[in-house]
Length: 296
Ligand SMILES: Nc1ncnc2c1ncn2[C@@H]1O[C@H](COP(=O)(O)OP(=O)(O)OP(=O)(O)O)[C@@H](O)[C@H]1O
Image (cartoon, rainbow, N blue to C red; front, side, top):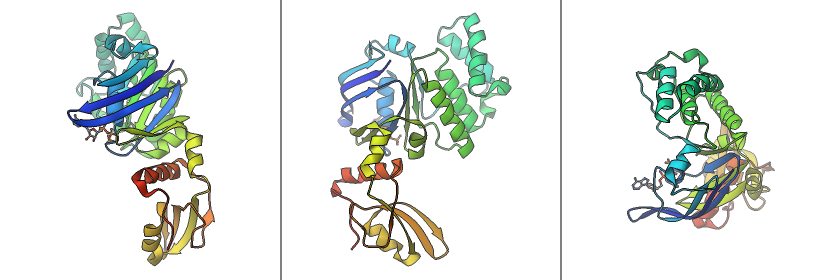
C-alpha cells in the first residue's frame, strides 16, 4: 500500500507548477509542507485525478493514475474549500453521497452511523450542514471522504481556522485513519506535521526540497538553534543578523529563538531543534543565501 511518483511535471499553460517530482509515500501519515504557491494543492489534485499531469508516472496502490475510475475507487479527497449540500441534514448528506458513490442501501445503513461516530458527529445526524461549526464541517468532510473505505486519503489544509481543541481532535482523527491507510496531509502549519507525521516532503516553487523522516529533517537544523533574552531595542539588530524563528516579549525584554551556523556574537543558549527550525533553515538555504547569516 503506497503511492509511487516518478518524474512528475505539471504545467498551467506555460507556468510549471510541479517540476520533475519523485516521491514514494508509504502507509501512515505523510506531511506535505511548503509556502503559499509551492504546488501542494496541484500535487494533491493530480493524485486525486482532478488534474492531469503532463509528464511522469504515478501509481496509487499499484494502479496507474491514467486509470482514473480505479484510482478514485481507492482514493478519498478532502479539498481546501469543502462544502456539502448546506440544506441537507448530516445523515441525509452522507446518505446521498453514498448513493452517488454506488453504495447499496444496506451498506450505507451500516457504514454511515459508524463513520459519524468515528468523527464524533453522532449527535448531529439531523443538524443541517450549514448549521455545523467549522471544525464539525471538516470532520464531516473526512467522513464523506472515507465513505467508500478508500486506501488513500488526501487532505488539503484541514486545520486552518480551527480552534486549538478542534485542531488536536482533527489531527488525532487523521492519525487513527492512517493506521490502515496512506494519509497525505498538506499544510503550512508546521506544528500539525510535527505532531502527526513520520514522513514529510517539503515543496517549494514546484520542487522537492526535502523528502524523508521528520526526525532527519529536524537533524538538519540540530546544533544551529539558539535562544537568547535581549532588550527590545536590540531586536532589529538581531532580526537583521539572524534567522529568527520565534520571539516572546516580556516587558522590555524579548526572548528570541534563532538560527546560527556558528557560535553567535551575543550571549545565547543552544537549544534542541524542532520541525519549525528545520523548515526555516531549509527554506533559507533554498533562497540562495548559502548559510544562515552571522551577527555583525
Ligand atoms: N488554475 C491555475 N492556473 C494557473 N496557475 C495556477 C493555477 N492553479 C495554481 N496555479 C499556480 O501554480 C502554483 C502552485 O499552486 P498551488 O495552489 O498548487 O500551491 P499551494 O502550495 O497549494 O499553495 P497554497 O498553500 O497557497 O494553497 C502557484 O504559482 C499558482 O499560482
